[in-house]
Picture 1 (cartoon, protein in one colour):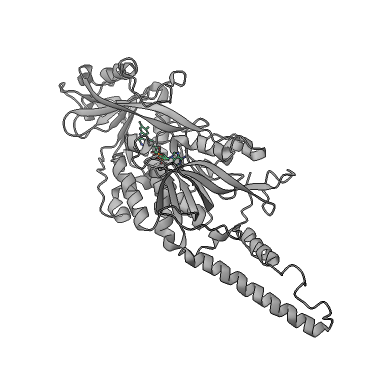
Picture 2 (picture 1 turned 45 degrees about the vertical axis):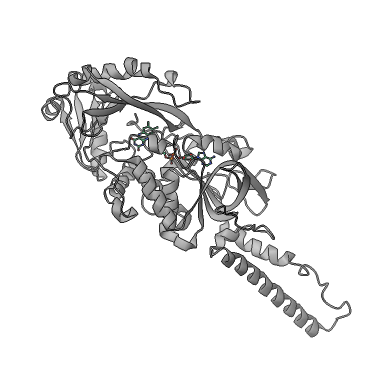
Length: 511
Ligand SMILES: Cc1cc2nc3c(=O)[nH]c(=O)nc-3n(C[C@H](O)[C@H](O)[C@H](O)COP(=O)(O)OP(=O)(O)OC[C@H]3O[C@@H](n4cnc5c(N)ncnc54)[C@H](O)[C@@H]3O)c2cc1C
């Protein structure tokens, strides 16, 4: 299912329509009723058309320059008197509206402004500038290429390049990248898959090695390898970094390049009918296309304003499914009947400390047990952070971010203490919870255009591996908007269309 992108067509149709409906331009009323001489009549018509064309372009130019913008996209479907004055930091219209200013939304703003500079007016709406519940700042900041889908591997390879060269991209930032790799452990059952994936990862540019149980034991003496057949150890481009620093780096650079951030929450959309747009898959519907026109934003002072956009990008993290519903995605007719399958899923992170003998040292990789329990070092004082995703039937409620301490006792600690003897005696010295922006369909990012709305793009649903992919996702969305196609990593298979045709992109390495 593809949709027809008709921006230039719509744009031209609108110029023609505006000219045709300009006062006095839709009939011959300005001609004297008795003017019958054909040459005089033609000359008068030319004079009148000349005035109308001049007036039209003068008005368009004034609208564009009064807001320091020069992008034609901004004028798609603009009707008379729709511009309002700026008040404070609020812009009443923009070329690109990004909903959500977390790592993904800020990366999109960063890439768009790095490439287009003043050519695109980019506005990011973020409901919580403190980011206290944003997944980005509650994540553990892991970066790995140990995936099974080429798209995920390639996005994370670029993530590694971006993070290792952050100063070139973002200026003077310190992302505290700890390049200690990942170590994924496999039992008999999962060993073949681990080997196959490792070959593909290395073929695409990752660098990891497969180790047997005895090789694991000699390299990581603290590891219990009794039930382990193989391990995959990342040698380069893997580790963890500071998610907050990445977010601030992207956001600040986007702002320096001219992106505007609005402190507010998108609470609704306004729509407009456009009979010029035909959506493939909806051709037989008697209904005209009804497009997205404006977002209704509730500002931090409680005031509600609307902002008109040429294109909007949905990057609302765990709240993306809810925002999509405001746009009638999942509740409308035809293609709009298919929901965006993204919802919050609570995940706990525990901070532990052990002073036990033979504890994993400073260069310990982020280690993942075959059942998904993970741990990594955190700082220099014997602290580690760890966690495990609950089973589908034990998913906790998502109306709060409280931590379940019993879950550590029953589901995390037994695995930790079995794998590492030093974890038999440990102290839990901290914990937090955050929301995965969980894609119920296949636990992978949903990236690209919406199949019905010609001016909406989606970038969400990363389900626990989005922070490392944020740089690549931002770049990818900027390519779609500026170049009209993917130029670096082809992410077509991760588009919304896969949900329509029921083709999940399953990833075997998700925790
Ligand atoms: C415990 C935990 C561990 C993780 N570990 C890793 C890891 O090791 N590696 C990895 O790559 N990823 C990890 N992740 C996943 C990663 O954090 C996310 O995939 C990523 O941060 C998603 O970024 P985002 O910008 O889409 O979402 P967010 O950071 O949540 O940003 C979305 C923003 O949208 C805003 N928003 C929502 N609704 C609206 C609205 N209506 N109007 C305006 N603004 C709105 C929110 O306030 C929020 O700031 C982890 C996540 C968690 C919870």
